[in-house]
Figure 1 (cartoon, rainbow, N blue to C red):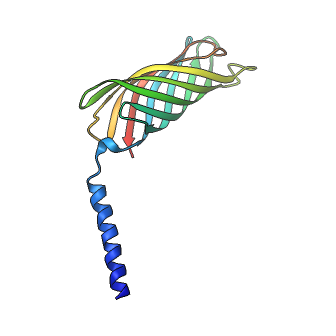
Figure 2: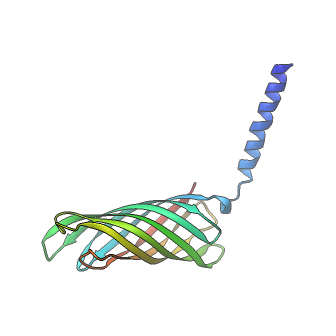
Figure 3: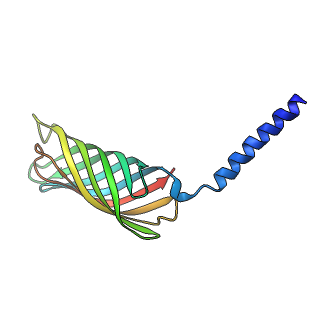
Length: 171
């Protein structure tokens, strides 16, 4: 009799988990994993940027993201290529949203690290990120969109502008 009770309890637990998983609403998924491909500009230098991020939805209108980015920059003035790394924490706020698209503002702080080829002494420090992004395909777990972020920093040889496409998947 103990085995039968044990099996019945196990079946009830497993079946209730399956029912809950099937009724899960895409809108209630809190975590997202994403990556971005973009063009990055620093003063007169340009390069390709690759970024990965992990996000958490604080509320229906606000999310927080941790991201790591790496860019390979080309400097025509110095005739050198150099690396630019950026680690950021950013908050997004939806200020215009429809059923399948949304427009978000971006604010955050970042740690920026320039290659020693370009900045020998003071090659890393903090920056402030401001930007905007639009995201499409909100009804699905997979979203995509466009993003522009400008980073302000006191040690950078120029303003840092990042513009490109984003891809996100709700976990």
